[in-house]
Image (cartoon, rainbow over all chains, first blue to last red; front, side, top):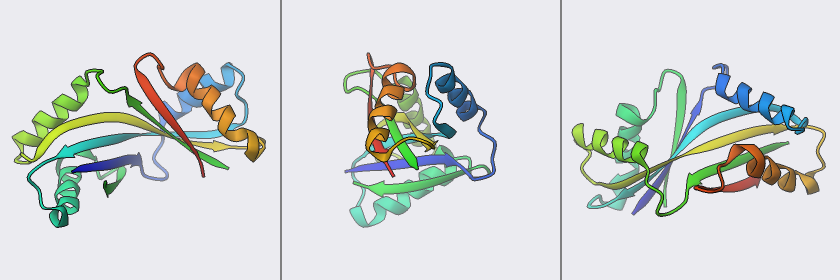
Length: 79
Length: 79
């Protein structure tokens, strides 16, 4: 069983990395970019977890380790 | 107009960051994790680009800057 987690900065939280990417894109001629927000995508290969409990288990992984819930949002998809 | 880019390591490319996350998850009691692969998700806020050309433009951004196409795959979604 697989799960995909998206971790992105909460709206309003500054994204210096995204800003740097935006400037770099502009420097090589891509001027149609208003904003860039960069986050993480984490693909988990799970075993021995009942499908019904998998989402909650992965949420717990996010709450305890994968996401900094002060500044980050996360979404969980069981694939 | 918005686009979402996923950048992930190609299969077979070692992911030390993913391995570190897997070990950390195990250390706090999540033992049902066979593997972890970590990548980037980049949300782009685009302007002044015709929708029909947007996907190709974002592909060019990936080819030239956002992705290291030697070891990374990328996907582009126009939202």
